[in-house]
Length: 103
Image 1 (spheres, rainbow, N blue to C red):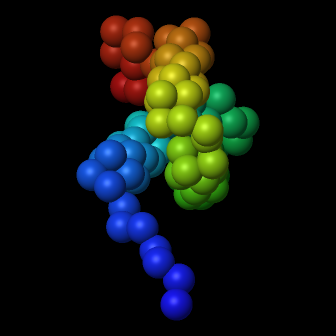
Image 2 (spheres, rainbow, N blue to C red):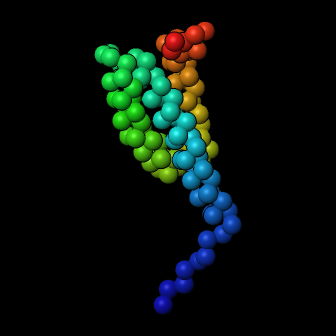
Image 3 (cartoon, one colour):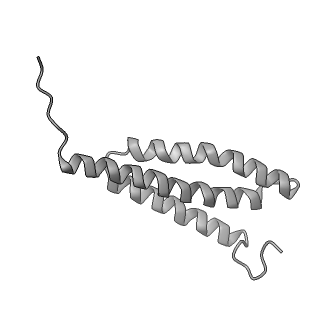
């Protein structure tokens, strides 16, 4: 009979932190990427939005996988944060934040 150690409170907190980062950080990155793709993909606007939305499922899955594959929770948070900042910068360059954008 093997003795299995019970997870400590720190272990449980680390997993909970990764779950929260995966859910909220992954959603943020996927939403920003979807907005960017909707603006920059060629073709009619409706098709660009649809393609961006379809891609968001893969982007969210990739973000979740990254959060749980990263060596530390801090590294995962930094990478998702930098990715979000890069996407915000790209959206700014694409004119998403201009006065009257999307009208």
